[in-house]
Image 1 (cartoon, one colour):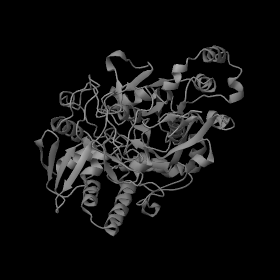
Image 2 (image 1 turned 90 degrees about the vertical axis):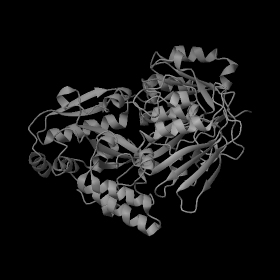
Image 3 (image 1 turned 60 degrees about the vertical axis):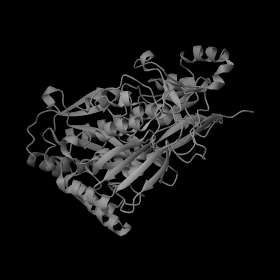
Image 4 (image 1 turned 180 degrees about the horizontal axis):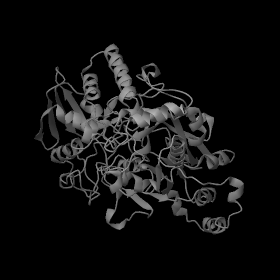
Length: 533
């Protein structure tokens, strides 16, 4: 999820010399382009391992080349994907899962129970939901080549956990690949999904090329959201990272690319008037400030509370979204409009900034004037704008701000550092959660407060973890509503993150491209087709 900054309007584009060679190349495009889907990616892929990072672009990559046992349908229910049959014991503590017959990896080898168990163990060692499952796991055993059994100490919705699309999804890999520790990046891209990827031939910065996996057998049932039939309708998918928005727009205008993920708002608005394009709103996201609990002053709750007195969501919205239709104010920790989202649970400051109060709280937190490092991604316009705004607000109360600029891919590596600020660590960064992930206390990565095992920023709060565990054991909607209210109330007290509003980013596609869903947490490209006359 990244967009570009420092962009120009459509009229300016046509004055650029860069357009001419692109027009010329379009005249000589071959008919073979019809078999290739060309996508402009919203960032450069640097990490290919979906267990090593939660970066959305890595999950987009992984969704092309890996499949899962279960996927969510359009109603939010988990449905079998690689799985064939699921039997659940009466006490909800034992799941027996069988695989579809004759499944194969992209190298032609059979997908077996051993591969599944190895993949799930690697997943559960890193993913937040996976760790919750692991805490309740008594045994995960092989029944035969295509059947495994999961035995639990307490009831747990295993299919929903395995269908998750955010965080570190439970993708199925060969046993030899999944045997790699979750702290080491994959060296082998053999996958279980509809497309294949030659990892040895690719380097960061290059266009990524995905080819149809000849060994993949789609399900026979109808597609529904990410579940059901996954058909590789294109022989090849190419994903190019084009950081300059003028060049990217030129590539779209001259028919060189089919889909533009996360274009700048003014580019999207300019393209709305051209009937050969469709401009769609993407998934709604909860924007937030993520403090680092490892480094002062934000290890102190008063410093985190000071941030709430500096942010005016009305001011921030136009900077982040650029279009009033793509921004809404929201103080619900679990996403406004979601089943559990409740702004009444938020007890923190709302509305216009109170600089004197913010300054007082920062002083009470023991702030000593040392640099406050904010990570600023220059190639993702919403985060870039929000980081600049945050830096400006902190400077208004006398804080010494060190705004460190980098591209988004570099930031996703930098945010993993737990080091002190003086040794390359950080204090604050902007982040977001899509509506599907941010609507549940289990899938909301930034609510997890399990200290060193939590998401980057590493909040540590036993009360929050006890509440999340209680939610897992809740059996009625009323009980879940009560617990989620308490979770949101507790979050507003100790502030694992500071909510700053909700936004949706546009996606542009050529009108001839169909079955592409822009409103998803992780973009996927199976079942996407080019209309034929």
